[in-house]
Image 1 (cartoon, helix red, strand yellow):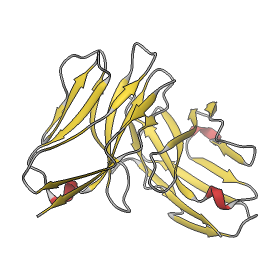
Image 2: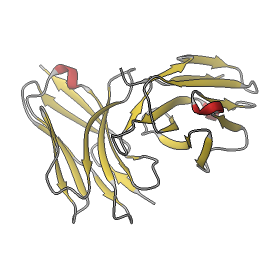
Image 3: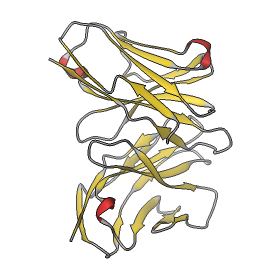
Length: 114
Length: 113
């Protein structure tokens, strides 16, 4: 058990629609991260939170993307007006208190934009 | 900024044999961490092994060990006694004080009978 659940696991949507993904940390943790992974590539950093505060955003996170973490627990990632190029796996990760910089990943949400 | 390079897109090894996956990195940070993650087909990313850059001793985790050459900025993963369950995509990654992980493009490892 990696300590992170993500929902939904799969999402198919039509271009132009909005989608929202959710990440629920199970284990006690320090920071929460979002990454995007396209087919055949390594994950790319999108953003991260410490408690409720969003501390860094990648330039990959266009204005159509927004991430929130109300109350410092679960986090949501919303994509507005989806484009076919948004098709990817969206990964959530946490780092565990006391284990330094090590990040543990959830199962991801696979998005397909038609 | 950090960069991570994996120059072997695909590797193959027979069951019970040993294989080494290569990784080089570049960073301007003094304190950083290096990782190998495994991603089996259609399954989630799993941490394999972790190395703190300030530690000279190479990390070992059961059949997995690393060869960390700090001056050469090299961080290879050795898998001993390969098993069919080791078939996966392997990613090398680095992080520093900025917290975010920077990943390489991955090496697809196939373990055969």
